[in-house]
Image (cartoon, rainbow, N blue to C red; front, side, top):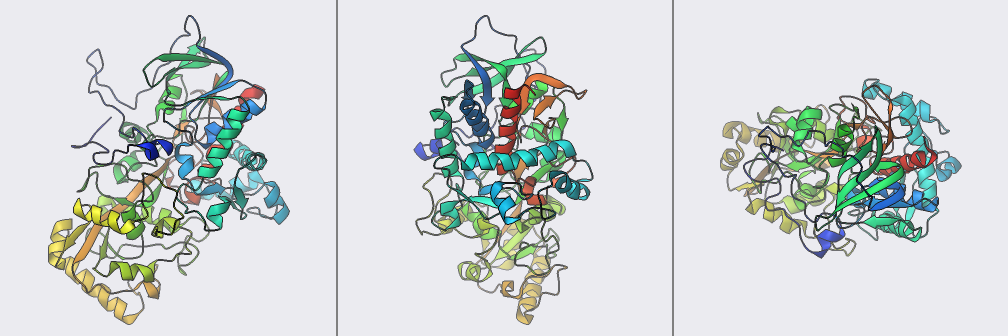
Length: 579
């Protein structure tokens, strides 16, 4: 895999108990070798070829699950509760994957028991999955697989109803999203919003007799006569473990937003334009490559979703990292409506969100954090420049909408609601100062000096700030097609001044293994690969082909978190039924 002059995560390694608890211990990049044993160039995008069956198996069960994010937990729990034997292998030190860090289970189209009672469906008053997908067609160039997508929506409703039957699952419907009850009531911060649900479903899986093997990395699939019959994994000590799945293998390893070789090959727009990878450092695409090695086709070419606020520290100055946590302090600050400039010091657009910016034209389709990312990464240099003065703390109190849908724009305060972790603190101010110290956010006593530090033309930069202050004095933004709200127009007058280049950080990679409506993996001729299933986002195609930024709920009508749970549920259900 391609590395920069520094490592992906130099200065960002996470260690200790809290890191292990939340599934990011050992979050370095995929290892890269320039050549293989034959002296030929090697790429971390190449398929991982399967092995032949061993002379004897270390484990023999009905179902093998690879990865224990929401989808893997759903698959594992469903199999165990159905009376089947099941093993799940997880390369990290805890279950949950990126799911722990999600905010809620989106179910926009409806169909759950609660939604049916409330009449909460889309696009009509009653749940109609085919109509829902057809309504999306124009936004995805009519490249959606309607039968597959519609069946996923049916599974989404069935899965959340099934999850709600489990003891201690703390979700409440509101009604298009199911949130953790404590998050919904403000007693827990949105960070690690699915932590309680993950813990409850893990407990349910174990209580039903599932075996979950942590710190155990699946290395490859095992194939016999064209049938996927199991996996070979290695534990923390490097011991090989061959596990046979009589009814199949379900791949739930997530996407590949931290594998730049895969990005370059399958999502080149994302490779070229996103400033930061993600969503978590363990998204290295191993299971995608295993499926390709078994002969799978792929779907969703060049499709991805993204969030605003990726600091330019990989290509620019700072710690050299290709990954920073979604909720990091600088992001909490910089994604609010400051003066935003492009490379030529023209005003860059800012979209607040569908719920509080009157002339935001994407109403009903996405939050502003998604639209901003698409807008900014399409600019020259693939980012916008946020400009602040030394009054930024006081200004933030004015321009930050704490009722906004995009909770990541609301700074985390010391109010006791944040779950203790080693990823983000409740001191965003110090995290911002740290970013200034490492050069990711530039600071200068004069505007001219600041422009020089960020690589912008000083004359144009000074003129842009002068014009901004003039607009602020009038109280009406006449410079942007989608104007700022009047309360956002706060002049920049108190030195020192600050500036940072921000752009897109990868939310989800939406290219993956091609699957049918039952999450059965397909080969290049559209035939099922016997024994092999995958959930999203090891699977691809949910956002069609060439989806730039994926505006609709940042991934799908199930979001990404709900999509993971329900597609893992559907994959296991199909495997157990032999579909």
